[in-house]
Amino acid sequence: MQHNRYLVGIALLAGIAFIVFQPSGISFSLIALALGFGIVVLTSEPMVEGLKDFGVQTGLSPHITGVLSSMASNLPEGVMTGFMIMSPGLKEVAILTVMLASAFNGLLLGLLVVMMTYKGGAIEMPKEKMEQDIEIMRIAIALCIIVFGTGIILNIFCTGEMPVLPREIPVFLLLGYGGYLYFLTKRNTVIPQSEPHEEKHEKNSWLAPIVIGLVGILIAAELIAESSEYIVHMYDLHIAIAATVIGLAGSVPEHGIALIGARKGHVELGVSNLLSGIVQSIMVIFPLLALLVPIQLDGYILYQFMANAVTMWIVKKSIIDDNRLTLDEGFSIILIQLLGIMLFDELSLLI
Image (spheres, helix red, strand yellow):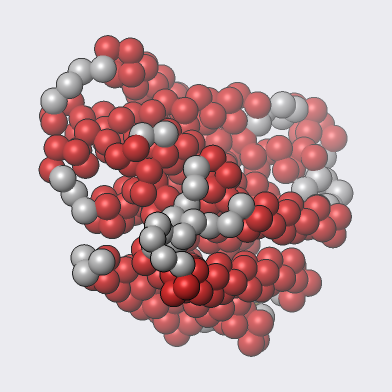
């Protein structure tokens, strides 16, 4: 543990040095990019552990803790895209990165299911614990279909400039997710099971990891955004390819913590983390960006809304059929996610 603290401290100091001195060149950009992702990996796990301690001390259920850990995992992506969207050359890349993050979270969910069931058995998903998740996925699917249909109609009947996302849509997305969080906390709060002595001994143990995680998120986001902008301009990468690479590199280290937690026995937390990650990309991060800048409803965006709706429908159907996730369903989720990502990149080259 002490060794990890030294690594975190060294990585944070190195990241600050890169931001302050801003060395130029492709080699330094690649190093800064790797350092940013390294900081995400080093600081995200302690931050999630801090959130788990916070949940125990405040009496939150493992399910709510999973949602909180997903929000913590999504923070690097949200801050990073916030930095990227302020750069004209990376605005489209940032938006597509958020859309693709949902697909990568679904891919990780499939991997988690396969990892936990390949020797037999299934991941039990009790209906009473998943009721709110199913409901928010229904809402997200409906809103994705509405956005997709609106974009198609506007593209058919509008002439001249590319149609943009109506401002009402991100507001309703945020309101929908806010309502989900409200009812989730009302129904899933539990009484802490820890002994009073242990609770007193570990009081506020969550504060330092969360603060370190937030600092790491800001540093990593700046490093990744600046390095990505340089590399995209240097090699003139297609925006879809750049978004896919950045989305994959950003989502896997952050939400890979869910796989680690599941291997250690925290299966409910891991599933909640990834399910929430899929929905949060669409209903939290994307609408926040849409409130900052106009979002053009071009082919990339519309395709990803359709793909996300299909993805969430498959996951929702797998859960409500028999309240469990099995090996064949995990394998199907992986195939669907891979196909969606490959088709997205394939089609984007033709647009």
